[in-house]
Each structure stands twice: as C-alpha cells, then as structure tokens.
Image (cartoon, helix red, strand yellow):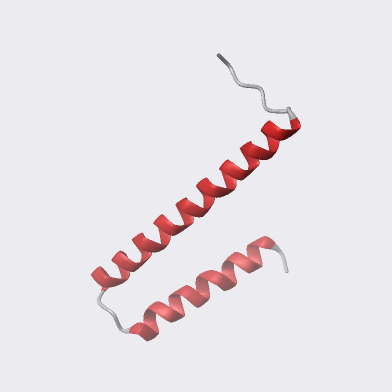
Length: 64
C-alpha cells in the first residue's frame, strides 16, 4: 500500500469515527485539537531523538 493510499484509508476511518460518534462539531474540534497536540509532541520527541543520534555520531554541526 502506498503512502497516499494509507493516508486516504486513515482519513476515511477518522471521518467514519466522527460520524458514528454523533458528537457536536465543537466537541469533535476539541478532540481533534488534542490529537494534533499529541502528534506535535510525538514529532518533537522524534526530532530530539534524531538530534541525539546525530550528536552521538558527530554529524550534527551547529552554528555559533
């Protein structure tokens, strides 16, 4: 399965879950905001791990 297909499937599942929940749009928006925050946290962790690996390898060059 390609990345585009995987994304399409994920989006379909999210839409189905939202529709099945029968929650008001404002509540769905709050839930999606929390999801976005969790994703941002995961991205930050991943970036920190990548930076640590680069530091350990000595491949990261920082400007002073």
